[in-house]
Image 1: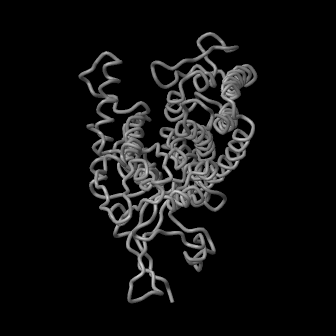
Image 2: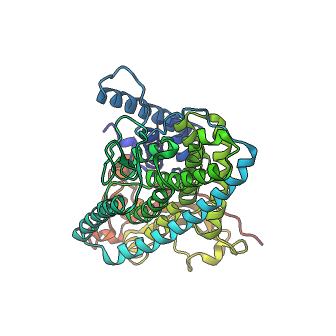
Length: 478
């Protein structure tokens, strides 16, 4: 078949890396950021060829997203929508004074603390779901409850909070509700709750100063924060990027309004205080996810303003440091809770002096270069090891064991299934190819599914012709 060459772990890992980059690129129109996100979060191994493949896939993803969005809006040949989520270019070029850097640093610390608490709360919620919400119908009910609570909270807050404004919100397709406001006015919370998450984020970044009161922003931040914690992990197609950005943009905009009110002499702040919403968004998502390089590039590509890259990088680094001091990142937490076997980049504390021999399974189970079929089956049924060393004892050194190779459990089962063995003293059959092993990938056979007769149990398998002859080895430290 055409795709048989991709049926192995190496190619699957590369596809995962390319898919992560393509997804981020399509969502944000950021092919470079998507490639860096794949490098930072999704790839186990990296090389020059993979860099080109991932970047090419990300760029193609951006192009087709652009083309399809253009066709959806009625101008297929006008490629002006590179991503599903764009922050839009600010009316004024984003500028910052050196006196604002301390404010950005404080916001980064807040983002790190909020991100760490987000991880802790979601960890407890994930454990609760694994323990009590295992049935599919319970998962559907939970999703329905979240939707009902979200709608109910939005309605109650728009009734209780007094935030009427006549200021026109950002965007031509913004949805607003009048509620109890006068004719010609709308409720400030309506274009946050009733819009799409992307529209809500754009409103927080670009709406005029008078569009939202401090009270409405504070209430919206608290509600959206806890709804985001609750929503992440639902059995629905959802994510954490946009909710985190919107939450951070809400409290960042609140900080910006406070800075404008406290420093009225700096008149230029009132014209582009939306940058505080952007800094808040970066701080929040940095505290949640703990990625730095890729998020910096993604946000810069989404805003189209490279001059603001330094403050974004600073707040992402600080929010990561603060969050890491308290707990792990959101992705790492989910990997740990779900029990996914991924080795972290850094070893845990206090393990620098532990040797591999101290944590290895003892006694070591291996095979000689030739072994009876029955003996191999018995070992595979009683042991769950994934790989077995192939060893040989030299005739002139009877007390020494020499490593000749390594053979995997899955390889042994396929060899037994294909009956690649022969009576002792006869030549071994060689009618097995790499395609025979790939045909069972990734749903490998179980040893209990192999049928072997009593006569065949005495047959011999030459393991050296099937194993890996150059396995990785570590010299023992004397």
